[in-house]
Amino acid sequence: MEKLIKNALKSATADHIEIRIQEGKGTGITYVGKELEDIAENSIMGGSVRALVKGGWGFVAFNDIENLSHYVKMACEQAKLVDNKEVSLAKTRVIKDTVKTKVDIDPADISLADKHELCHKYNNIILSSKKIQTSNVRYMDSHSMLYFANMEGSFIVCENIFCGISVTAIAKDGMNVQQAYGSIGDLRGYKKVEKFEEKCEEVTKRAVDLLSVKPVEGGKYTIIVDPKLCGVFVHEAFGHLSEADFIYENKKLREIMKIGKRFGSDELSIVDDGTLEGEAGYNKYDSEGTPTQKTYLIKDGILTSRLHSRETAAKMNESPTGNSRAINYAHEPIVRMTNTYMEPRSWTFEDMLANTDEGIYAIGSLGGQTNTEMFTFSAEEAYRIKGGKLCEKIRDVVLAGNVFETLMNIDAIGNDLTLYGGLGGCGKGGQSPLRVSDGGPHIRIRNVTIGGR
Image (cartoon, rainbow, N blue to C red; front, side):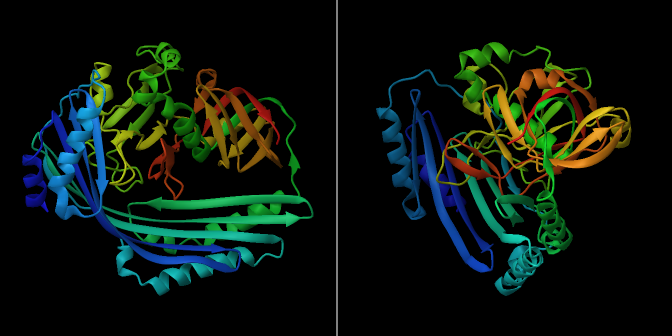
């Protein structure tokens, strides 16, 4: 493979050339209710060439890698047809490396029959309750080898082994329909998905219990947010605003996201770190061959950096951060997060709760929406807080507000950092799902607008 790629690079007539070749295989199993909707083993083989000529990009994706030199020429010809633009790339060092993934159990060593039996068992646990209308169990694993080379001399081989599962329980009582969800997925191997029975039981119970729970009354509340919802908030509401392609193209956001501006208390730090081995967002190198790193987006309350590709780093006169990522060989790299989280501090959850006279404890996330700095997120479950203690359960808790005001209103940050991967991943620019992790500790936020659905 190395000889094939290097020979193809010799034929390039461009200012910059990148070649990515990907080969791999995987398994997918899906249950919907009692029906096995999908079970398959699949393989992937293909590549892409990206060429830069006088400020114009050309991109070609293909499956027959034997004709690689032809596709290199095609990408160069495309680039020459693009209107001349002021595009340059920040410098990165030449890298020659081979990266292996360490796993507890390689999912490739588990038979398809055993994987199916595992999903069947989890599905039966969910459907064992009479109040469950339907279920969804989805399993996925993949093993891929990615070869990267550029005309600067880098040649990198990266192995990735991903494995994950998600379960959903939907309960119904007349017109009242409630759901609960659980997922796990990362680069650690098969062992975690083997021990998901307790999560299936918890998800089932949560969906059923929500049928008898009263909706929240809308208003302004002090909110304690659990690590999972904290991670979703950090990723969706702030992380995407830190992606430099979005910042560079948005004049309003450039004015807001000025380096050195205060976004929170001295306790607040938000990080994107692609170097965390085993996590879903781990990559030693991004899709441009740039080493990943730990990047403080906010440090001690001050905006200190953003996420970059080589192109955005050059445009903004900053350094690449290793955040140019593509979901597979057939897509161009764009600026994306890796493992994004809020750093922990000193508060225990018990002290945070005891020091909250009245409010809401919001747990997990069923999704939400963001529009520049505005956001709405729906909690999976929630409890009312009275006199520093958890009281009755409530539902339909939807958090809404301005991300920058919300960051300033965080007045307590916990010591219990947790990161979450999963099958959902991240979506941007038509590329989804990209494997990422997000998380944080418990946090407390004052004056949050809550509305029931």
